[in-house]
Amino acid sequence: MARVLVPVAVLDGETVSSGLMNLLSTMDVTVLGYHVLPEQTPPDQARAQFGERATAALEDLSEEFQTAGGDADHRLVFTQDRRQSIGRVADDVGAAAYGITGTTGTVNRLLVSMTGGVDATNIAEFVIGLIGDRGIGVTLFAAGDGADDGRLETASEMLADAGIEATTREGEGRPFDALIDAVADHDGIVMGERAPSLSSFLFGEEAERVAAASVGPVLVVRSEDDQRESSE
Image 1 (cartoon, rainbow, N blue to C red):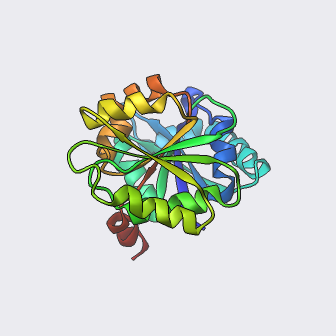
Image 2 (tube, helix red, strand yellow):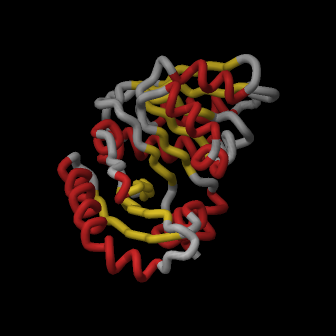
Image 3 (cartoon, one colour):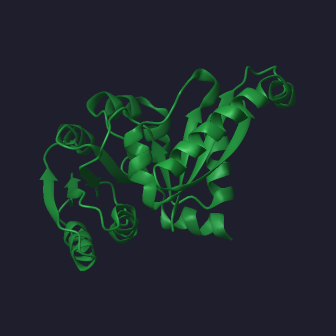
């Protein structure tokens, strides 16, 4: 069973939507509680001061994931480099994907982006494990130069072989703008690490644009190279 890392700003009151919890009921989950420290604050000092409260919040979140049907554990980091810490923990736990919470409830239809030179097979395998035998609809999406290069057909055939019916859709114009246009018709999004880049999606303006366009959760599937490196 694949593992998904769900980063949460635990001391800032950030929580996880019921939509993401229910969507990940077929996955193993690690909830990563993090708190970004001022440059001069030692992590050990922050852990001594806030660790008990943060751990209690993470235990509650893990129990909620388990109530939704999944298997969840948790990690806690006090860090001055959020990006580095998230990547390190993803490697430590062998995460196949990152989960970004939304505010929606039940996810009935997923938009699965194949844009950006991603590995269609890798993403399709993740989606098959994610959906399982649930009746969640799937739209396979690609945009930009070379959008129709066989990725949509490959993914569609893999999902069909697993008993999952998917429609295909090609966007026009700039790939990210086309993705934003397509988001509105769906409750959640699955996308590859390079569609756009993971770092820009998690930490930059694009994350805010997707969050503004969709109230649903987003799952960013890590590249096979990163997954392989984290397991070695």
